[in-house]
Each structure stands twice: as C-alpha cells, then as structure tokens.
Length: 91
Image 1 (tube, rainbow, N blue to C red):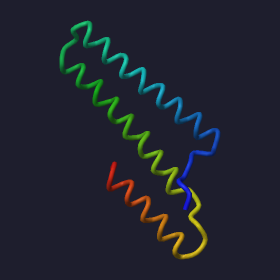
Image 2 (cartoon, rainbow, N blue to C red):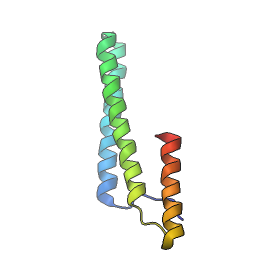
Image 3 (cartoon, rainbow, N blue to C red):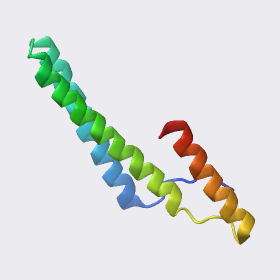
Image 4 (cartoon, rainbow, N blue to C red):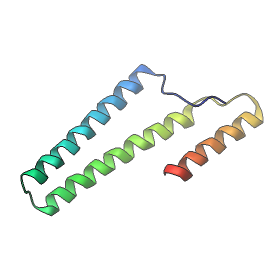
C-alpha cells in the first residue's frame, strides 16, 4: 500500500491556512514572552496553539483514513493497521 498523500488542492490550501494561523499564534507567544506578559496569559495562548496543532494532526489522520485502501480484505486490513500504528505512535 502506498503512503497516503493529501491530493485534494482545497484540503492542502485549508491545511496551509491552518498552519499559518498556528505559526502566527506561536509568533505571538514569543512576542508575549519578550514583552514580559503574565505567565497565565502566555500559558493560555500556548494551550490554544497546542489545540490548533492537535486539530491539524486529526485532519491529517482523517486524510489517511479517507485514503482508498488496496482492493480486497488484505488491503483493508493493512490500511486499518497503518492507521492504528499512526495513532499509537503519534496520537
């Protein structure tokens, strides 16, 4: 089975926009630290960035699940095993 890829141009565009927002959040956190903002405010922004990264991860897992498995029972079994491995490793 091939490694799933994000082929849909709209999905790629949406993921890129999501990652750009996360990048902006991280930049803002760095600025908050440099400007000596309260730790609680920084922690709140870090938690928001972490949640956004989690959502990006879940979208990538969703992409993998939607990928068409190879025909037949073995193809479906291998596909399910690959998704399970990904979740066990990174989830």
